[in-house]
Length: 339
Image 1 (cartoon, rainbow, N blue to C red):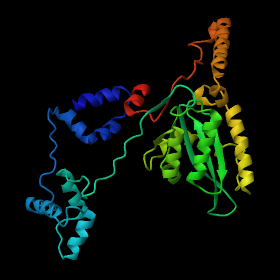
Image 2: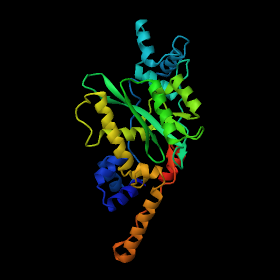
Image 3: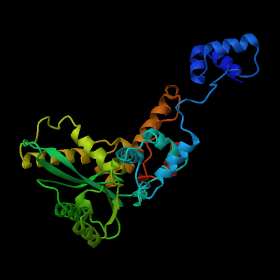
Image 4: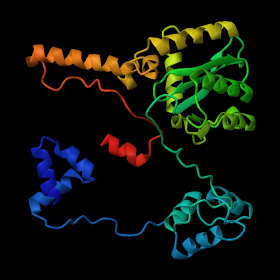
């Protein structure tokens, strides 16, 4: 079988030595097989067990030690030094790990159970003001270690920035005002919007969560330490900080920072052609104007193809509207859509 596979690969243009490397086979062994017409492997292999291998008794001793009451909650990194303090050497740390792994005992060894963080539930937006995302990012100041804090919320369906503020500190009160004012400005009805966020202290603060409850806003959270559970806000901040207009030097004052963000928000909402929503502006999509814009583009392309059909080897570009935006899609859904 191996000879047949090698021959097939060589006929396909592969080099024989590379094929042998991939199979873990020496090229001279391949030559001997062909010369002798061998039907079996015939490689001798190791003739004896390694001289430094643990005996069955020593292996059992490792397991017994690792499962003693005084050691069963400890990792091999801790067991081996403690044995050394007692003047004992049974096996190396790596041997402890290998034996425990082979015996299926390398699960969490402490009494406390490791924290279980499930993926946030899938949120689907089919129109504006159903799902919002918000976060806080740092803006540099002339003083090292001191920052301005940009609070920013956007609508996941339209990508429109629905609220922003720049403050000198990070607090739940500032966050609460941002969301309350955004809800008022957008005319959000109680129970209609879900707000997704990470696990920062302002987001988890009791006063902020109470404010969301009073507004009728449902809260959704990222997993701790998982930045891509809040991808829309992360992408928005990247757009902000990689714009050509973003200053190379720190913001001279709070007012300068606010003015820069104000100009960015105006550009982003009303001029930025967002690729993920088929290159319409967030403001036009939020207002429903993108339907006619995209339909007009579709007509332009259809007319161009009708005039010169020989220039089109495939269908015209798809300008249909993105009707459904998913935040944190479930794994099976993501895989099926990728397929």
